[in-house]
Amino acid sequence: MINVIIFYKNNLKPGIKTSNHKVEVQGDIVGFELEGHADYAEHGEDIVCASLSVLSLHTANALSELTSNDVSITQNRDGYLKVLATSQLDESGQVLMQSFYLSTDAIYNDYKNADDKNEFINIKFKEV
Image 1 (spheres, rainbow, N blue to C red):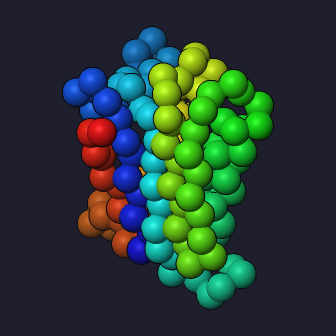
Image 2: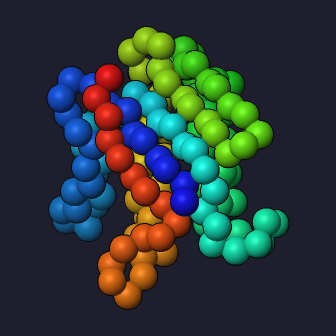
């Protein structure tokens, strides 16, 4: 299972709200952490793991290379990645973090079982 932690601040736990056919991500997201493997399929064929890997690496690279935001990135080869803003994120940084959360939530919902549970991804929130 991939454990995802979404870091937020200012007591604004992230959430997703839909109104007038527009999706709004609420909350002040400042980072995320992923650990583990989805075990949806064999190595090299695990689309759940690959989806979250691409999404998280894209977000980390975009934050560090395409914006002026300061982020700390920690990664290892065992399925661990942590991205955390070291200062206040500007609007582009916040949009990237919200996009990461929105997409992670979509992947989570797409792979729920008949009991409305997800055996491959676990999402938690942590105030920092």
